[in-house]
Length: 301
Image (cartoon, rainbow, N blue to C red):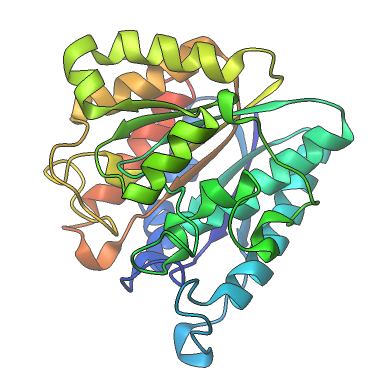
């Protein structure tokens, strides 16, 4: 497979500094080399340029740094779409989860031109489906899923074209354990498939993933996987932007990615919210690299 790495060193969408160093930390952990070891060709396209918080005005406190996040997301959208046009696989490294607006919009724009449909597997502790009206913080990393569904700020919702990038019933959230009240209402109304940590505890990760993969691949042609490292328990990955106790353990995380690899349906991937400032000896970034390896088919035997 021809894999194109693309960094999006964004921290404007989160409430903590340091996550903009995530792409560098993941590269330092040996991502390109590990993917090459699996027989892939890897091209590193570097990082898109994003202005620092100190250079900018917050703007509307209900959608902080919206102007710069929109500008960067447009660029990311175009870059992802071009990678698809070359017949290659986009692997985007974050940055906070607001970058998903650009990544998903790029996939969605490509699919629209080709008259294809996409599904999304969203692995996250949070729903990320707030809008400025429902968000308790105004941090846009809690809004990307809403944006690609046509909710929230028009500036974000129309990146890559003024259309809903994905059908709600072709989205599956896995590993959720923290939802705001507004997010609960959006998820119920839209019919997004949600598999919480309670579901995983009761049913097991294998059964949950079987259901999730079925939902996101039903009548779709492309599958985007968005993995927020805060889905993993902080005891396994402490260096994340918004750690929440009670997350996926080491084997559950790998089983998710192994299940994706076995399904053979993933067409794009992003890894977000690695924060080296909060990490211990880069172990979270190294774990992120291990997960990517599993998603690309690395086996125990």
